[in-house]
Length: 130
View 1: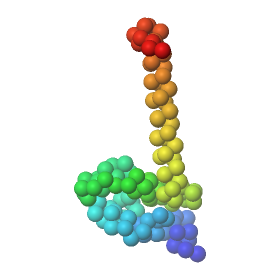
View 2: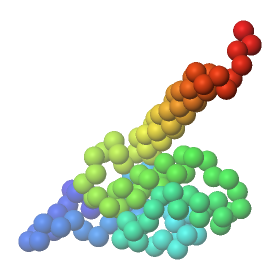
View 3: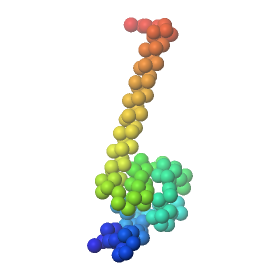
View 4: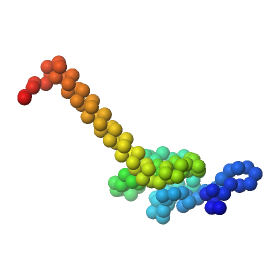
């Protein structure tokens, strides 16, 4: 049995996990955590992934790939829930979620824009050029 799944006898709790044991977390991400002062799974569990992403951009002076945000989301979710569903431990699950939300926001903005345009036309605020 691995350290991730072995349960301590008696109290039913999982053993203390290390950052490097989290799924989707490799050497580069461990260096990023260190740069941000995150040294344990317990510290990671208290973080906000979006704030971590913004902090990384400030710390490096460079724009970070959005997949870094997705990895932060996966890591924080695992840190908060050691029994997280396997698919949610993968950064790409969070990437699909982020992209879906982004598309939903874009669709809503387009719908709202069309609605405002329609209302403006009804009030005669937009001259029809056609």
